[in-house]
Image 1 (tube, rainbow, N blue to C red):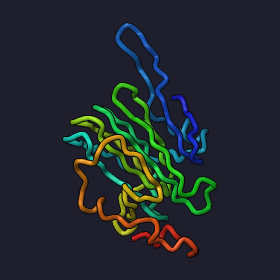
Image 2 (image 1 turned 180 degrees about the vertical axis):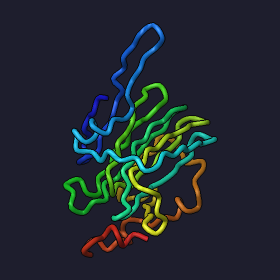
Image 3 (image 1 turned 135 degrees about the vertical axis):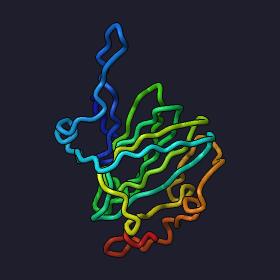
Image 4 (image 1 turned 60 degrees about the vertical axis):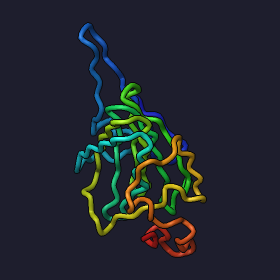
Length: 189
């Protein structure tokens, strides 16, 4: 695997290191030792599949609070998505910064999402499928989110949002979080 650091602390793009032969190629998509050697959490508690009927579908922005904070390894296995992460760690030098990465079945690229990062994506094609390897169990009492169109972040989604859940459309805006509190992230509800 080829690990490329992003502009957000502890977040990596992971490309395949293909071993081609006359049959096609072989590539490792996950290795606990390689993840640990890069300082990443090498735990997989759950594997999830997300399917999206229509391009423009948006899911996010989701995260879980400590002690149930999740790491995620996101890969698009059919079609294409635009994946966005936001650093929600108050102690981080990249706190409240975000990036977007195009993940496609063709580029076979993955995005490693550290704990306490809000995560969401938009389907760029019909019938987009996304696989998540998650480092913690889903814990509803610790689930939080941010509005996908929060003007503070000004995320430039590639397409108009055509489908979104009521829950994702109604997450709070960052301006409602008391940033001066000891743990502003926990204030998001």
